[in-house]
Image (cartoon, rainbow, N blue to C red; front, side):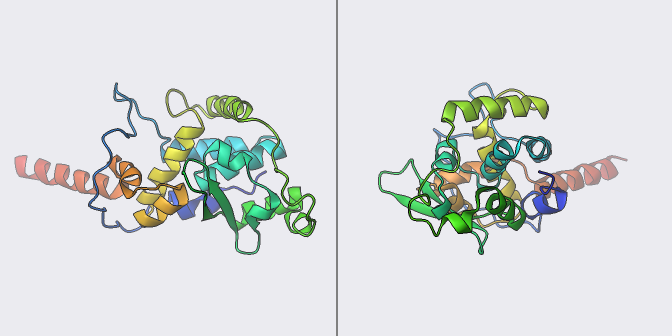
Amino acid sequence: MQFCSRNIMSNIDAPSPPQARAVVRASSAASLYSARGKRKYLTQAERQRVLAAMSRQPTDAALLGLTLAWTGARVSEVLALTADDFLVEAGVIALATLKRRRPVVREVPIPHELMAALDRRYALRAVQQESGTARLRLWRCCRTTVWRQMKALMAEAGVAGRPACPRGLRHGFGVGTLQAGVPITLVQRWLGHAQLRTTAIYTEVTGPEERRFADGFLRWSAARAA
């Protein structure tokens, strides 16, 4: 599973020109930090290490983990996937949002290299022609097993604490997409949030453009003091 290299990851991880921050206040009940101020999301450096560790796993575990990483989906949503949920030619996965009262399906694009690997392993296009098997789950493991596997993988990647779980991967996806310039309304749809204010929590994190502004201010202050 060596296809997931830095050039593939760049479409989300690499910063692009700053986007206008949505003027939306995040819900006070939701935060990317614990009550003690501990971070809950993966940084982009941690995400890179986790993706590299995923690529070294056995094929089925690697593909499950990479699907989680590139969709920002919840474990239960990925485990519910069947062959019929993959739009292979378009490079899109149709995910059922399971935390909504009414059934909602959202389409999330993934790297074409990942879709090709999924198609090779699970013969997606061939299975889609067979009504008896097209609605069978791709991954038959349970949610607890995936959480245990992901936590072990995070440890291998040197990630510890609150972010070291599938939820940290989901939060890292939200932070990374916004920092890469993806419109917040699109990130909202990809993550399956009913309210934009939920997605707005990901704007709490200092992005690359904010760091540049801060560095410029520090240089200006130092020059004035000299």
